[in-house]
Image 1 (spheres, rainbow, N blue to C red):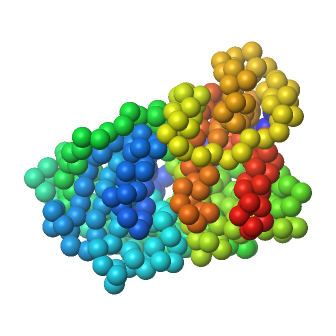
Image 2: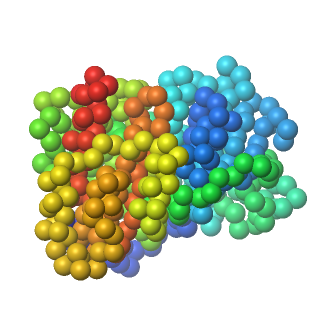
Image 3: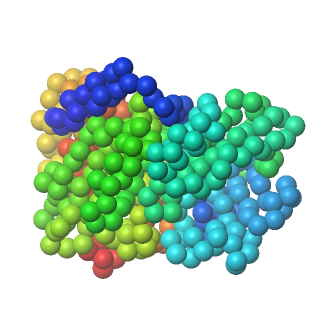
Length: 386
């Protein structure tokens, strides 16, 4: 079994014991993607992943320079935004990075305080506290830059009774495919450049009050050809988890280097979205055309009973079905988890999704790293970027 859990317990229970959280975060509010064609991207995420039409902003709502479609599935909200002109900074972002995550919005009680506390600790401002109003009340938002051009937006909703926020209207659609069982965002992973991981770890500690409760070095995350390093950052209540990756020296180019080359800088590598039934969810996603990484070899599945140990007695899933769907399995002292990773969701080999089901485990699948990264390398080899 993985030895991750001891680190998790120490980080979240001991380090925060008695500490005052100057930046209380209630959860992930939304994730905003800048994309080349929001209307078509929305159709893809609805059709492939089972998101539902939720809200819309554009020319019809008085927004002259951009259009945004908001999709919802359980507690997950995605905002897909495209520019309406070539001179837009949104367009500049897309030209450089391709489709990708621009804003990771965090739900807070006080967006003004969040902005004040983070900027006085060194955060670069993105948006001063701004009050947005309509007939349903008001939303206060403020924002700061994190790695690359990525933004953390602080969203205060306590005085708002509408569906999403001012400037948006309800998006009515006759086409709303059935949910695939995605529940909430478990964690989001960022890729940064050579030697930058510890810089951003310190930034999250100093600016956001996070702790580094889990570390993986290039001896743990390595294959025959490539390696990377990763540190997991978490806020005080553990609701927000941001692993940060950087490349490490290897014989060939790592997946992190490939991402940095094609995204042209640091950014969000993947969203891990939770489900209560990964077999049902992945079966539905595959049926809708979502492509996943190729499976690990037979020896990986033969070894699962040994790696899970006593958790095999409580495991509900059929190993044959998990292998059929290429789902990975790992465990720690608290339980086990199941996970699988999509191929990139756009033409550039950058952003992808992870589907994860936690059955008590609090780790991140350390026992799957080698199998996962060998699978990614096979995809890199097919693209000629390994």
